Every structure is written in C-alpha cells, then in structure tokens.
Length: 302
Ligand SMILES: C[S@@+](CC[C@H](N)C(=O)[O-])C[C@H]1O[C@@H](n2cnc3c(N)ncnc32)[C@H](O)[C@@H]1O
Image (tube, rainbow, N blue to C red):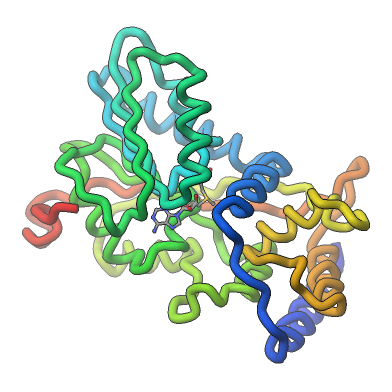
C-alpha cells in the first residue's frame, strides 16, 4: 500500500480529471446484478455479515413462531437465501418478505429459494422499491444491507421502517463507512446528484439527532481486486463496474488508468491476491418506545 500522501494524490488526480469528463452510464439491472455477485464473491465481507445477522436473529428470536422478517433491497438473495436456510427449522415457521426493484435479481432470488425446498418458510418477494411498499404486516427483524444509499429519502424511509416493527422488533442496517474503496464510488456517484452518499457516519448522525437507541459494530472485510488489473479480463471489468457503480467500459483510457492507479495505491499484495480493505458498519436500531416517537411515526402505514 502506498503512503497516505500518494493515495490522496492519486484520488485528487482522478477527481480533477473527472470534473471535465463525460460520466459513464449507470449500470443496467442485469449488469448490476452480475457485477454485485462477482464483487461479493471476491470479498469475505458478505460471509461476515451473514454470521452477524444469524447471531442477531437466533440470539433474540430463537423460539418465535412465526418469525417475520423483511429484507429491504434483497437483490438476488445471495445473502438472504443462506440466511433463510440457516434460521429455518422444522419447529417454527418463518415468513420472509423481500423487496427490490431489480427484476433480474428478484427472479434469481425466487429460483434459488425454490431449489432449497423449505416447507416451513413462506417467501413473499416484491419486485418494487421500498418507497412504494404497502404492507399491513409487522416484522420482528427488518434488515437493510447495503441498500440505504439508493433510497430517495433515507431519513424518511428509515422512520417508516421503524413504524413497521412488531413489538420487540429491531431494524438492522449494514452500511459502508467513507473508507478509501468507497471514495471511488463517490467519484462516480452522479446518479443521485442531489444527495451525498449516505455512508455510515450519516446514518449514525441521523439516529443520534432523532434520539433513537442503536448499537454499531465494525465488520472488517477485505476484497481481492487483482482481476481489475488483468488486461482484457471481463471479470476485472465487472469488478470495476461494481466498485464505481458505473459502466467503466465507457471511460477514456486516461481516466481508467487514474482509476486503477488509485485502486492500486490502496491495495496490498498477499499470496498473489491484491487486497483492499472492505469494511462495513452493522447497526441495530431498537424499536422506539411508543411515548418517545410521534404518533405519526407509529401509526404510519406503508
Ligand atoms: C448492494 S445490493 C445489496 C443486496 C443484498 N441486500 C445483499 O446484501 O446481497 C443493493 C440492492 O438495493 C436495491 N435497491 C436500490 N434502490 C432500492 C429501493 N429504493 N428500494 C429497495 N431496494 C433498492 C438494489 O436493486 C440492489 O439489489
């Protein structure tokens, strides 16, 4: 890994070059889904998140029947399906609702779920964004793993999610900190120009301002970005697309090189792999006591 100064210089050069450049397009649903899965396979972070979620659910709701879970931004279920499998038992029912606007991802989630053949689990998959969800259900766990960044109005949506909790329920949010890898996404974040990216400090500030009780725990993952540096490697292009959340094949070569130069500067070599820190912050937000929140929040329906 390069010194702090040269990492900062590499990022500044990229930012300056991007000021005058045509921005690459946002990823299509299909491309997003494919690149997301490859990216997660190259990192150990999702495995750590899965373990954290399993522990949270099993230590708080082991005997509950039926256990009701809402997964917001579930994608293709690459996290959710192993989670469902690990908490499904024959002695209690699980009612699992997943919501995501990506039709390609939802289809894959359903197919993989059907293959698991879990008779005690009822899956209700909704192909829509969270802002348009209507539900009279109440949930014990609502998890929002790496999807809050994309919401139109994260503060408002979080308030509404808290209103969907069953008594004793909790909202679990996993959100990236503004670490170096995510600075690349930030450079290309033009699709939501009116909002800054909601990194984990934004979430913590919001919860503190709202006087909501929460815990926060760092998950230290690492992602192998070696493929990004292989010439004409489609998988390397996919990795870079997901990291920047953009179609990098549209980048001029000088911009691509600046991008790679920053990525290399934050990496370290180990056994042929090129590892970059891939941290996440895992939050648990307790259900607000009825007398501490406005009646509007408690009674509001999706
Ligand atoms: C990084 S993926 C995370 C998927 C899954 N939670 C996981 O950890 O594997 C983010 C997901 O959020 C979804 N998303 C984007 N905007 C959303 C919205 N407004 N409401 C619900 N989901 C949304 C995307 O389609 C994408 O599948």
